[in-house]
Length: 284
Image 1 (tube, helix red, strand yellow):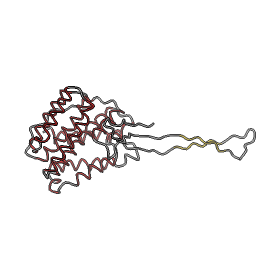
Image 2 (cartoon, helix red, strand yellow; image 1 turned 180 degrees about the vertical axis):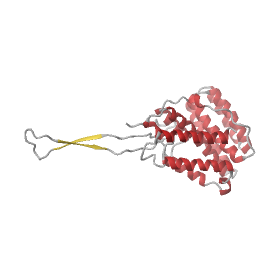
Image 3 (cartoon, one colour; image 1 turned 30 degrees about the vertical axis):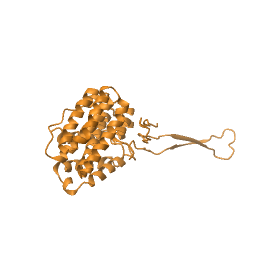
Image 4 (cartoon, one colour; image 1 turned 120 degrees about the vertical axis):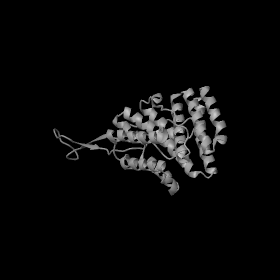
């Protein structure tokens, strides 16, 4: 069975691949002699192909690509995955950046749900956090334009606009020499996406969908590499250290996902750990 995700509307070839489990059986006849005589039975040999996984994520894909691919192959009830409003922004800029990333992930969720009002409300929350990080002036016009597009149900155009908005936010932070904050926003996006996707997979526990929970060892390696690029002082902060511990947990339990299907217990535990971290860092 081969599952492939659609090419994004932007025309970029995103190489979306999902779990492929090859369990084909090749049947070959092997006669006992070159020319079997009458009544001589041929020997049937069965050969089982090895377990093969083609990861759902590649480095060319965005978090939204990943979410859309999972939505193509599971029963995703997007609106049931909404969460409560985040708290008032903290003076802790690292925590604020991580929460902002989670809100970007929520904008992807609203996009999938086609929910204009919730999308607009979420954009207002994003703007509040952008002000704390000093990026509101640069990003505010784009957030307002996105809200208008959602109101007019321009979902196809909005998809690319939301992705461009995330890139713009990253650019502004780096120009301010806030590289660590830019990384934390990006990690916040991915953690929210993984929280959403793992919840979907828990509700759809079929064997073929379990590996979709994380995507691939390459995705985890990419996230851990980004984490390692932050300054040591930043990585030791309480909020950031908790994120590092979660990434270590995921790496231990998902490093073999391209060689074997994860158990349902691992999927459930993954969702519990991600959900607990997101509640601790973004809802309190």
